[in-house]
Image (cartoon, rainbow, N blue to C red; front, side, top):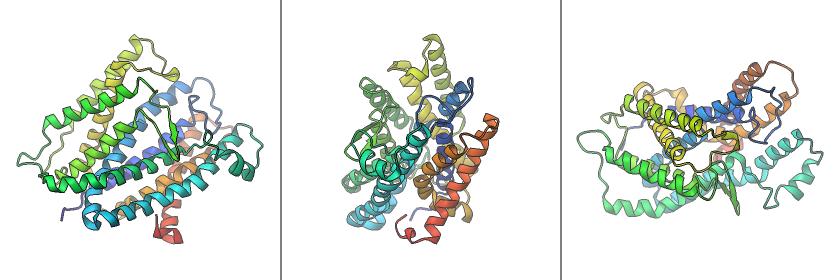
Length: 370
């Protein structure tokens, strides 16, 4: 039995917390028409820069990687049939609950903030469930994770017969693995960019996803499975920090330099520039590996409190978006300094999301499936 890797629990907590911060920050930009949140002129570049630095794609990549990493242990413990049943319950039921309850409520609040006078029941039954109106917001992640999990079952079954061995005595990941992964994800990202902008989401029945990022996230999920089978991140396995700092900084400078030299306005879309695609893909991967290296080095000790939070991270993700919408909507008309309001809302949304998720899991009948 493999020893529990505590830093991944801590990294999961950090990632979910930053997702909440990211979604609050999005509501302070003019690039996305979610909950109307009047912000004085001049602040948009600041908050757009913050959303870029926090990096939603990087956070999503970490979540898919961690999910893939833990799939192997769950599969081996439960077997194919029970694993599939467990995924359908743990992911499918919350996804349907979000589709029927949470997403309509979030969209209704957004519409109200923009002046809609439609009643909740009217909106619920006559507007939201038109195919062109369905917006699952953050719940897209759960639907895609369920899809990846079910697809992984026959793959993991076959991998067991291929007898994939753990990492050798050198205790580090061969450079060719990183290079091949970067090449693959760049090809996927840049290739899909000929058809869609990275921030564009499309609906396919009840699935909602970014067509550009979907294959990239699948690659991170698969990398997590591979990492688990190779026993990455065990006590003997080293993850160096400095090379990933250099890699992230180099790609950041390439991205920023390209934006300046080519005079590209990110609000209007970056297009499918190969240098920007290369730098974006490089920053995402370097950021993921840098956070893994930092957390393995500094946050790899057992903490009962952190384990409890980690066990509730999935539930926190489910409920946080509605909480963010409610808090920002109720405070949108309050006239206080913008930065002060933003900081207060970030703290409040993070606190409420973790507290409410913990209460739902530990104190209500919902604990049987969340």
